[in-house]
Amino acid sequence: MKKTLFLLFLILILISTLLISNTFAQDYTQWELPDGAIARIGKGGVGDIKYSPDGRLLAVASRIGIWLYDAATLQEAAFLTGDTNGIICVAFSPDGRTFAIGTGDGTILLWDTIIGERKTTLIGHRNGIFGISFSPDGNTIVSGSSDGTVRLWDANTGKHKMTLTGHTDWVWSVAFSPDGNTIASGDSNGDIRLWDPNTGKHKNTLTGHKRYALSVAFSLDSQTLASGGEDNTVRLWDTITGAQKKTLTEHTGTVDTVVFSPDGSTLASASGDIRLWDPNTGKHKMTLKGHLGGVNSVAFSPDGNTIATGGDGDLRLWDANTGKHKHTLSGHSSMVRSVAFSPDGNTIATGNFDSTIRLWDANTGKHKMTLTGNTWDVQSVVFSPDGNTIASGNYDSNIRLWNTHTGKQITTLTGHTEGINSVVFSPDGRTIASGSEDDTVRLWDANTGKHKNTLIGHTEDVQSVAFSPDGKIIVTGCSDGTIQLWDAKTGGHKKTLTGHTRNIWNVAFSPDGNTIASGSGDGTIRLWNADTGEHENTLTTDNKQSAFSVAFSPDRRILASGHEDGTIRLWDADTGTHITTLTGHAARVWSVAFSPDGRILASGSGDGTVLLWRLR
View 1: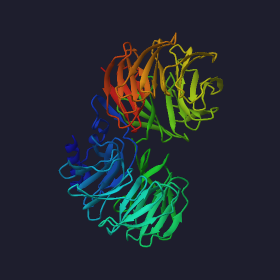
View 2 (view 1 turned 90 degrees about the vertical axis):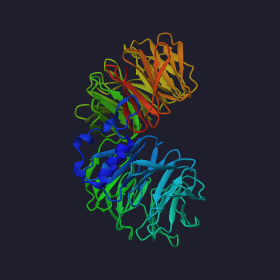
View 3 (view 1 turned 45 degrees about the horizontal axis):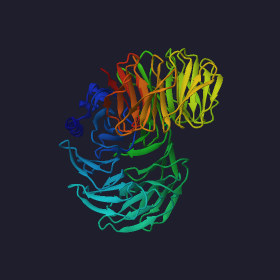
View 4 (view 1 turned 135 degrees about the vertical axis):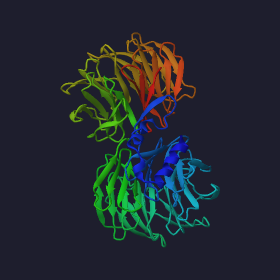
C-alpha cells in the first residue's frame, strides 16, 4: 500500500494535478486503516507543515501519519503511515527526492520519493526528534532531540557523522543557514547554540529567552537568526557577533514557530495568532486571525504567495500579500477527549482539546459541523435522549448546551468553580449531571438550565458521572480512587465502593442496571453489583495499562475499555474473559462508545482521530 501511495506521490510531481479524481480524494477515511477498523474520522492534529521544493505538495505531519495534499487542488493525495512511532517533524530534501521524518521514539525515517520505499532508518537519538533539517546542498541532515543532543547524518547513506553536545536540556529546534556554514539549535533553557557543521565546533551561545527557545530560522543572507520562545517573544540575532538586534513583544502567548518568507522580506511568527513582520525594521505588518487554538507550525509556499498554518485544529491557508484567509482544510482535529453517538446513530460528536465540538457523519466519516464558542478544552460531550441537544463540559468550569441542528449555543450553565470532566443526561432527558475538578457533582434542569442540587462528598476531582438506566441512581468516579452511589432524586449518598488503588477515570452502568464498570489508573477494570455494591470481578490487562474509558454494548454482552497504550480491549461482560484487543491508535484512548444498534464501536484518542470498528 505504501508503495502505491508513493507512486501517487511521484505522479503528482510529474504530471498535471488535474489527473487527481474527486472520487479518490473522497476515500481518505479508508486509507491505511488498522486491522478491524472500518473507517477513520479525523486526520489527527496538525503538527509540522512543509511544502515540497517544487510547491506541488503540502505535507502535514500528524500523530497518526503524514497527509500529503495537492497544493493546487487541496485534495488529499496520499497518507503515509505505518511504523512511524508518533511523528513530530518532517523535512523535504532540497531536490525533493528524499523525505525525512522525525519520530517520537528517537528514530529518523528516510523515504525515497522516486521508488516509493523507505531508504533507511537513522538510529542514535535516545528520545523524540523535535527538529530536523537538510543542509542546503542536501548532503547532510541535522536533528535535535529531547535527549539533549544535536546529531549530523549523511543524507545519502544514513550514516551518523557526528554528535554536537553542550545543551543541558531538550533541543526543540534546529536549522541550517542558507550558506551552509552554521547550524542553530534552541533548547528548553532558552539557550540557542550556533555550530560549525563541518567541524562540529561550538561557535556561540545566544542567551535572552527566559525559557524554551522553541523555534529558530535563518534569514536568506544567513546574517540574522530569528527565534521564538515560551516567554512570548520573537528575537532577532546577529549570527556573526551573537548580539541581539531586536525583540518583538506583541505576542501574548508562547511563540511556537518562526519562519522567513522565501524572498526574506517577511518573518512570520505564531502563537494564538500569526504575525507578519519586516525582519529588517522589526515593524509589524499584519496579523492573521482565525485559528481557535494555538498555532504550532507555519510554512510559506515556495513562490511566497501562500502561508499554511496549523495547530491542534484546522489547517488554514492565507494570501501572504493581503493576509486574507483563502481556504481551510477540514478534518484535522486535536486530541479527542470525548466521543458520543447521536440516539439515531447517524452522527458522532467529538469533544476536542482545541476548544471545539465537531460533528461527523457516522456513515461516511465526513465532517458535518464545528461548534465553536468554548473558551477552554472540551472534556465531555453527550447527546440528549431526543438528539436535539448536545451538552459539553469544558475546562473553563462551564457547561454549554447546543442545538444539534443549527450548531448554535442555547445556554451556559455556571456554578462549578473548576473544570468539568463529565456531563450526562438522565434517561428521561430532564436532568443533566456534571462532575468537576472542584470535587462536586451538580444537577441541572435540562430545560431551564437552573441548578437543582449539589452532591458533596468526594475529596478530589470527580472524573466521571453516569445515571442508572432507570434514572434513579447516579454513580460517580473520583481521583481519590473511590466510587460513590447517590440517590438521583434527593441527592443523598447511598454507598461508597472501594478497591481501586488509583484514580477512577470512568464509570458506566450496564444497560440492565445490574452492573457498574469502572476503569482506573491502577490498570484494572472492576465490575460491581449495582444493588449491593459488592465487587464481582476484576479485569486486568497484561501490561497494567491505565483504563481511561469503559462502555457496555447495548445488549450488555460486551464491555469495551480504552487504554493508555492506545489499545481498545473487548471483554465478555459476564465472565470477564478477554475477547480481543483492537490496535491502531497512536496515543491513549480517552473515550469509547457503542452505536445504538451495537454494531459499531467508536474510539476517540489523543492522536486526534476516532476509529470505527465493526463488531461481529
